[in-house]
Length: 567
Image (cartoon, rainbow, N blue to C red; front, side):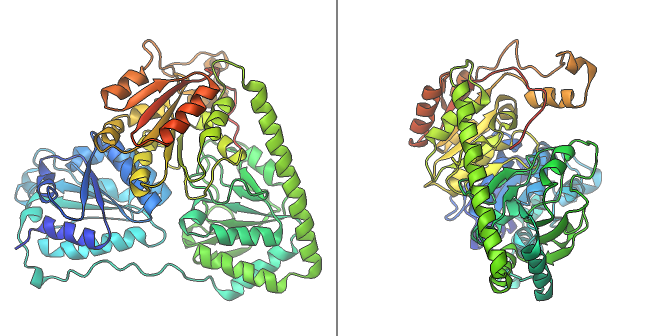
């Protein structure tokens, strides 16, 4: 008879799982043993749980299927918690597993035992310890279905060692694979009609759009609504800007909201109605006065699969609970029916004016980049412009270098697809390097670029070994200013006295500086250091066209601005 862990893997494979990402220990040995010659699932080894979890995260976000992680009991789960927090904030469908000690030892609280379910529960949709081998099929079905049902997110299964090894009679259990119900539920029609009347009659409407638009496969529907209304589409701010909700080269795309309340209010003050779709409204980071970021006069129409998000922080005029793709399609259909000729003319004129404003912003940005091209070390703008010149249209880009990237690739229209952008949402560091590896496993036909800060990269640098071990061709660009620059900017933003004087403790990565070229080569990844714009463009283009991983260390200016600008 098969063992519990063999049935576990069989059901995961039947659910379409192709990879298990892990770092093993004693309590995971039955799983490792069962995967030695498994015909359908490949084990991807990471040297530490931070890159392991990030790889699964990237794979799940890119593929739209569950990322499966196997961790080593309490200590492995502890190492992975920062990346679990990221996945929870993103809503990534992960199935996180960990071995548990033999149940016969539980009473004496043996070495490495712990209440892992209690630890994982706050940052998962569902967490459970499987106490009976007969419950493994139901546990797998529920885990897959819960992870993939909106609002999507991670789940956690604790698997005791003896349950993994116990034989199970396959005729005595139901091995039906998971079946996830369709998410395509339309919002109520009367609410949709009220929303359309409000949008069509608005003096100056706009759209706030977030990551869940892309994750609901609703970009085309959002484009249709935006073009029919002739309005700006503004992405969520950098604190939650994880996926690209709208084509960045579209003339109606207005990049992202600012980071802080005063600037958000100023940006939104001219609008009277906002359609909010696929985003958390709002999830800010640093408290600023006035605390209310949305101006009081703005009326909100909010569409989301998750009813908890609607009106959570700001009252809405119309709340639409339902699938983003279906909801936007219905809004577009009703707008086509109900807009008057005068409203259509106004929308067309407004769209033309917004397109001209977009063109002027692009020209101004390009002129600013040209003015910085001869500065050395390179400025963040010049660095990102050099990368933009090297990006193929089908490239996927993972960003974890917020003070360098600053939406420059979007503002230049350099991201060729909406689904190929991955930005940081949870802000636990070490995420980007592993996510890029996972995304490339999901998309073997697409070049993948990770743009990383040197500080963030060091939290998950062990992932380079995995890229080398499995020959996963990802290009890693380290934007290297040898400091935690965002902390310096934050300290100045808080008006801290020593920060104002330029004095910082524990924020400079010097004496010694990290030799990323030597470090990458020690982990099996070829690496070079470049300091010129054209050299950077050539290095990125060559690496993206290759079939092996490569790291490019790029020194950039170290002077920290007083305030982080976004968009």
